[in-house]
Length: 171
View 1 (tube, rainbow, N blue to C red):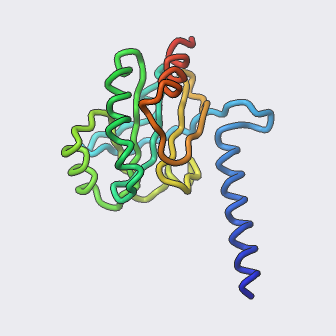
View 2 (tube, rainbow, N blue to C red; view 1 turned 90 degrees about the vertical axis):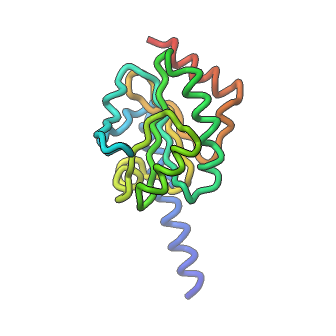
């Protein structure tokens, strides 16, 4: 009986991993278009991924209760501040159930990039099939997902900065 549960769990995890992989790449290994969505930010304004067409977007899924998520917010904010005038946007999607904890965190940490709420987890689960927090998607100027990053990232690293700068230089 216990073995059956383990096999079912392995099957579910493998399905979700393949779904996540298929989101970033098609069958030929080419980048896929980022699914568009509209959510409300913490000020009540509607924000769509399509609002950032022509920009390089780092779409970051996070929650205030996720320690690695909280730890990468300040480096993300610095990266955004350094590159926002060159056409770079960080769009953070919080899956917190309540907006107040997000507003408090954003205010305390002086986060300046847009933060939207996905309390129902529709974008998180249905569109992007995210299972791990934090998860980020690097999206080029044409709206194509070029990289999926699972877990915490060193957003101040020279490698990630160069990767983003290269995308910013692309037409």
